[in-house]
Picture 1 (cartoon, helix red, strand yellow):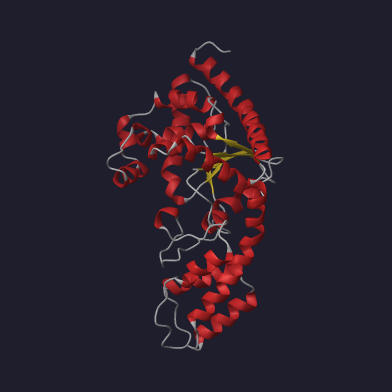
Picture 2 (cartoon, rainbow, N blue to C red):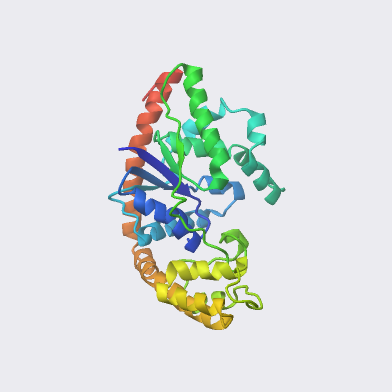
Length: 329
């Protein structure tokens, strides 16, 4: 069975964009591949989080993974920092990574722009840590968005370079895996093209009905259509995208017809959309509340995931040390 690796940084609660992007992919892949889904707490250190936030955020993501339906009996779910072998491989990959290629990385330049007072080495070597996360399990597929494609190409480059330097055929070149044909791009409520935490335009899986209604009622709209069957502008198409994923076909068709005959009332659309999003969220939110109260069970899941990930990672590192010429333990 082919191995898949993917992770998410613990920077707060999951939102609808996360669910219909990464999480839905995970739910499908756990039935078809040997999956390792990790919580990337080491990656979060580039922004200097407080210690208590690291622990709480990792547990939050684990809880929400489970509440969404990721099954620890099917997929290995673990916290990155529970598998120290990743850091050893990170070191070895860094020894064969070059300053120029790291500085040209788009994600480095973007992150450095966003935090000019904290341009640390972790930002620069983000691609090698990402590569270590992937290669430690000798993954062949990695579900990523288009914004990570350059980092994926670097992971492939590092795999090839290690093999060439040591004259082996050890690391496979991981391919980007996308369900783009099936994935839905979830828009932001502010009229932007993408829902994102940094943009402050999210509906979180943990949001209750009151919170959802307040957020949806503030969603950006326009003055309304002026001609029958006219094309919907982006801010309005965003609302219809939400209707398409959480509402019934009848509801979608009703408001689509109202748009087409120029009688649409955005207030009515938003009220219905808020109800439907809340109904979609409700069972996930209930499980989040239930699971988060059972910290002993969550810790058990985390330990079991760490043990499985460690077993895979330790095997890789043992072979890597032998290839390089270091003593093995």
